[in-house]
Amino acid sequence: MTRALSDDTQMLWWVTLGIGVVVAVVVVLLLQLLLNAVGAVERNVITLWDTATTVARNTATSWQLASTGDQLDYVKAEALRHDALLGGDGTHDGTGGGGTPTPPAAGGTS
Image 1 (cartoon, rainbow, N blue to C red):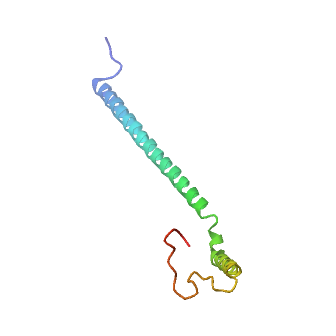
Image 2: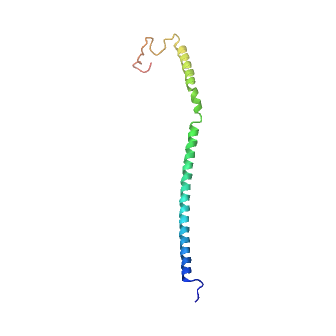
């Protein structure tokens, strides 16, 4: 049987094929690591997106807080008008007219 390649050349080809298999395995491993990293980034982006939309939803009406103090002043003024109307002579201030609060009656609330 005659050979087309010498023993040295055939050995070089086997070494080259072995190196090629090792390189292919390393490439597959690196691609798998890259795929895992991309998956982790995608999960973190989804979490970030959900958090950002929640923050946006929770702060969408925060501009209305600027008028809260004015609205409370209106409510206070209206409550004082009701108190003046219900008190009639102005003695209905919860103190019984003497300046100090009166305790509730023994049988319940006053």
